[in-house]
Image (cartoon, rainbow, N blue to C red; front, side, top):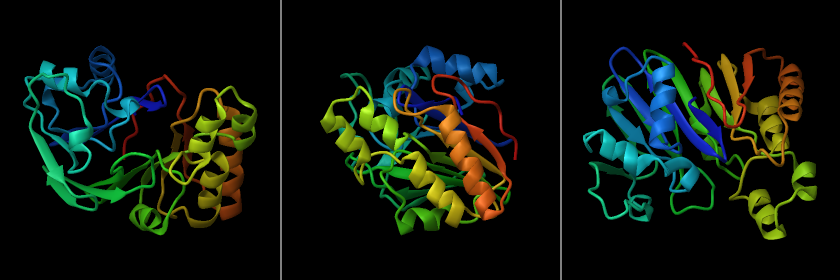
Length: 254
């Protein structure tokens, strides 16, 4: 995880054969530095997959693509593509798909699924390779059945735990922003994440990463405590990591 917060989101997934980014919400310099820090060469990326058009997921995309000579294909839904601004510059190869489509790239199988968020056509992704399933579900107001279905059998799960409801209600945001975050097309709360963990988290999960934390309306301590209690209630013991905003995560090997 190169980054996971409202300040920027980007996740690197790689095998011996194939390397991809999911989202490009950091600027080019930061993205390349963080890839270099884990021993990865940006020029060897095979593709970039986009979840939705909010700036914390795509702000670095145009410059990253231009720096790489517009040779790296960018995958996004047919409704998301027109919502991106390329600043009048040449557009990289865009691979369009409909939400719910499966894309096979190298030895990766990338499955998209619709998520409830306030953008034109947001998606989450599962990535399967060599019998391992990695799932990313952030930027969603709640967990509908289609999302839960796609998260089944996951070995690695990046799940949103964006805000503590009480902190959000007394926090500095204007009321209309608070309403947006709390809505069914907003962001998943600690409570909602813990309810899912305590009742429906796949027993196969080996690594549970809680991410996209709000810097104003959440704390790492609250997020971790709730998740630990939810896991104990469920009787599961995966490795639990809370992604700290604005900091690069460690390398996870599966």
